[in-house]
Amino acid sequence: MLGQALLTIALVALFHSAFSTYEYVSHMKALGRPEGSLPASIVFESLIALFLGIIGACLKAPPLKEITWTSEMKTRTIDDMDARMGFANFVTRGKVLGKEEPSKASS
Image 1 (cartoon, rainbow, N blue to C red):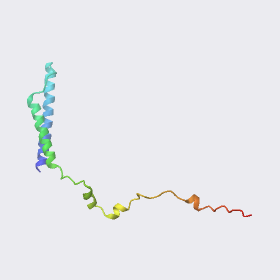
Image 2 (tube, helix red, strand yellow; image 1 turned 180 degrees about the horizontal axis):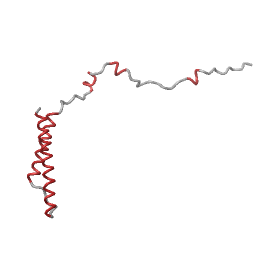
Image 3 (cartoon, rainbow, N blue to C red; image 1 turned 180 degrees about the vertical axis):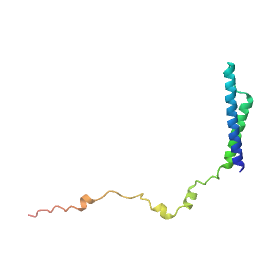
Image 4 (cartoon, helix red, strand yellow; image 1 turned 90 degrees about the vertical axis):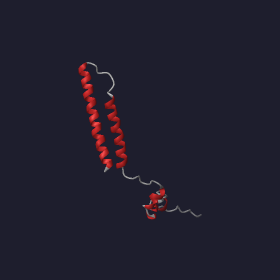
């Protein structure tokens, strides 16, 4: 709940700082002075929005899953692990088995 609220506040603050930046740059272009830095209040608002967004995303994220081999083996059975064809041999002996051996002529 708190994470969602912080993310919403951060999103609104970020959109407001973007709109303020657009207005400031438009105003400076109208005055004929497009270069220069942004006011400190807009930069400060953007940084606060970033900070609130990071905190909100951390609070809203689900708990981390364990990624060890032991935790993976808890979800599988021995049949799942041994049912693979890791050592299957795909070489056939069909050429040899279907032929008869040549008979030796006895003299």
